[in-house]
Length: 390
Image 1 (cartoon, one colour):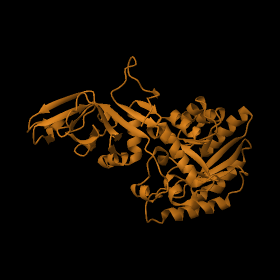
Image 2 (cartoon, one colour):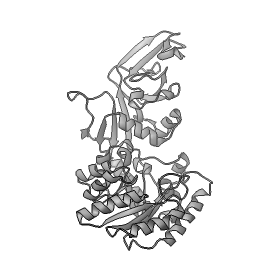
Image 3 (tube, one colour):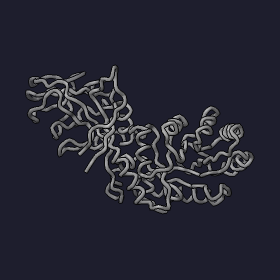
Image 4 (spheres, helix red, strand yellow):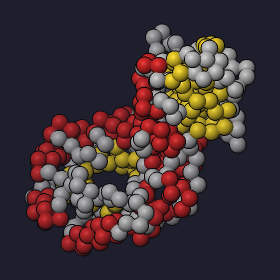
């Protein structure tokens, strides 16, 4: 059960809300953080990843929920996100995972953000800003042990550390990397890359007692306890999802879904057999059909490629989407669900009565991953915050 809605964002016009809403369960956010804490134990730090608007769940409300559950470290992609957290009163460490440019260096120092670094230009900019502010700035070095994304390659580590030591305004606060295949079952790549990471760490001196080494995302912290190092970086798991379907069965984490996407029936209409539905008439009714029209389409993150596969919940029962999904509308076959009328709630993600549609299903219909669906729904729709109650 859920309490009354406590706040909502993204209202349209003069305070008139959209027919569509994404409900974010703050109690589930807190629960999932505590599940990660229970799994990794008190000796391992947790950096709660809230980049990309907290995977569509709302940057500031999600960070506040995690802080309530005990989080003291947060991961963002860009400086702007870190500044928003500081302005909202979030304390503790905020790691900027994409690094900084010259302009971002000033903001990072001014707002006490911890930047990931991998270029000499970033070191120079940060040192200059720290000198202006009369402080020393901790930085975390990003190394690439096989992701092929941001970070220094193994042979670049020593020269970069030598460059870092030339700036007394800076100190080594951490070393980070990332695995590309931690969620792939039966693959030895992760073990090999962790061996390389450990070998690199053995060559790095400095940073003192406060330096943290970290490489474990959600999949890694679930599968490889020995790779949790000083700090783990849960992302998708905090939002109630597993990095891969099979990990949901294998993991000790008991996660609760956080997001629910609901809409409103605009119209119910009867059409005859042989009626083409939506653009291109790619679906033609085989019997007299009752259609419920929903104000949901690809502008709302409900992707066109799901046509012919997607289902929604009405009165707790599944109803198939018929015809092509439009920019702001889709049609649902409710012939076998009596009593549906305009104004009824339709659920595209989450629970309604005894029915449930999970984000993993929607990801399969969309030929993508659960991460993308959460980001789409959250960024394209009004976010409403609730606290579930038992």
